Image 1 (cartoon, rainbow, N blue to C red):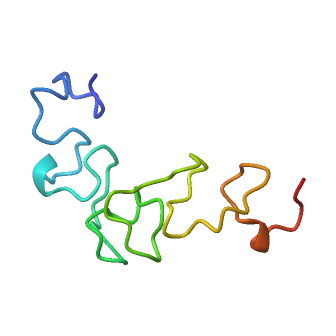
Image 2: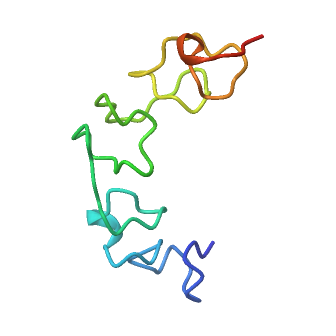
Length: 91
C-alpha cells in the first residue's frame, strides 16, 4: 500500500500521508493534516478522530457506526453516524 502515492510503500515510508509530519509524530498518520489539531487532547487529530468533542484515546467504536463510544448515545438507528437526538428523519 502506498497511501500518499509517492512510489514508496507505507512499510518503507516515514510519512505515509505525505503531509510533512513523520508517522510517529503525526496525529493522523494516514490522513494528510497540515494543521495537526487535537481539540479533545486524546492524541488523535481532529481529521481522523471519531469523537472530536470527547477524549477517546483508543478510538473505540463498539457498534461500528463511525461515532466513537465516548460520543455515541447508541441511538443511531439508521447507521448514518448521526445520533437520533440530532436526526430529523430516523427509521
